[in-house]
Image (cartoon, rainbow, N blue to C red; front, side):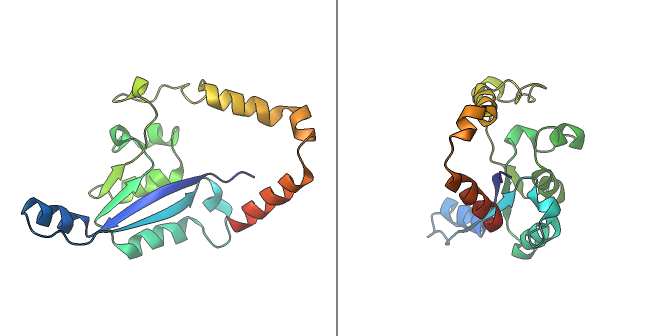
Length: 157
């Protein structure tokens, strides 16, 4: 299992910093908290499930919440978002519409518009990664320690 970490950025006291800086006063200190989100793995995780993640975000009561969605996709319909993004990012954007902002970027070629239907299937880097992952000769030549390390990584996640 490969765990992909996504990030949720919570900024507390940011609004106070911006206001005081605009007024020429000494800005207040800003606290930024980065929470890792396990793309797809929260669904079956014994101790870091979706409820735990969402409760943590709720508990922190941040002034702003950055999620891994493109800014232009914030507020789009759930059906579109579900075909492009992980559930936890969509859910946080839905739960906190007044404070959420997008931090993802997928390239200037699609900036400002919707993500094309086959965008991810046609990304050259993902095609090459799939070929490499399916390469039997390459997989057979991997040191056994790699599998042990991947399992340790999975357990840590």
